[in-house]
Length: 58
Image (cartoon, rainbow, N blue to C red; front, side, top):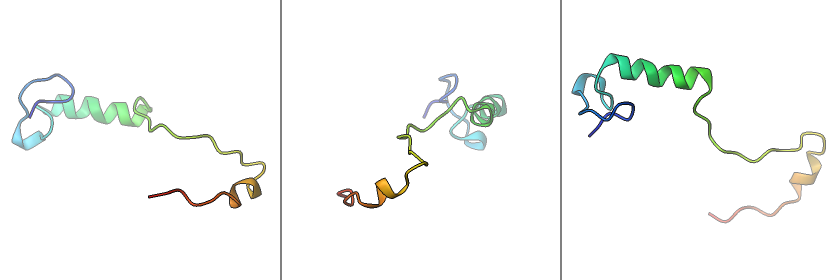
């Protein structure tokens, strides 16, 4: 497995990272909001509009 930050071989102690430095870089990206999860915006002004939607297929 390679380090997702720098591409070097991962170290068992810091897995999936190669070193503490790359783990800290990744943590910093999470804490500053560099990583995001895509989502749809919800209109909070009319929540009743969303109550009538059919359930999503699984």
